[in-house]
Image (cartoon, rainbow, N blue to C red; front, side, top):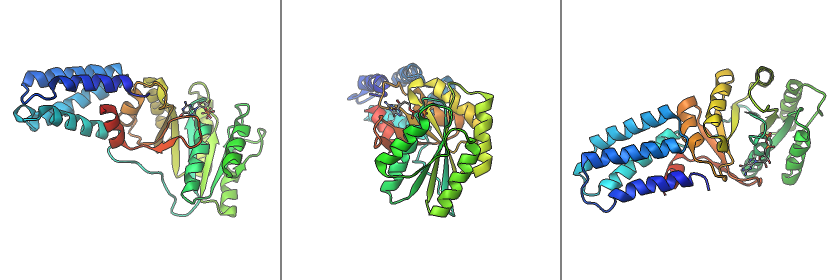
Length: 296
Ligand code: GDP
């Protein structure tokens, strides 16, 4: 399960002061030192950890933890609130165009889970009575088009493809036009990823972006890759106005670094969490619930 190590570590830190009627300033400092180590071990960005600890300490001092009769509860509450803030505070929802269709562009490295997410998001939208259209814009990865067609077939959502010989810019443009003509209120454009960021990939997705002017650019990152996921997110965001991050593979053994750093480092909110390979394993990302889950 994701965050298991971090969860256990934090619970251990707080169990030391739980049940105690009083703590000293030193106890608070010691607890903060351990929280800091736990976060670093969970692969949270160094600067993010530093700022986080400073904020918690500031609040802990302000709230006079040492004078409280339930000091552990006060500290846990502060940490919970700061973790929630760190992950974006409130839930960030999907953009909606004033005039349909809402165009959503998927971006990310190969294998991050873009195509899978495209299917999942279509299913979610469909369950909310929307009429999505999927657009197969990944013409390079063998079987990506087929994969999207299979996903669309499973849930009864149409998939627009022009095969792999037409440019993704054309495919995206025609897909959006088709959605307009057919009355689809959402268009989800799957795009090609590479094994790592390269100029060609970026140029292509930028061209698609200018051609269809999406309402939402969802950057799909593999949470299992920790800080690397955050670096990828930052590089994408520097070149493309990413409007939301989707963390995938949160069902795996991820330590938590990506979930806890990506908002603070890039400024982009996390909108969804993908928690498995099955089409219904997608959740809206709730920072408060995630913080509570981490604190156990
Ligand atoms: P793309 O290259 O970005 O389009 O990636 P795919 O959608 O093809 O996903 C790559 C692999 O990751 C596939 O085997 C998916 O089944 C798997 N995958 C995607 N999302 C998740 C997830 O949330 N959890 C797990 N465990 N696997 C996932």
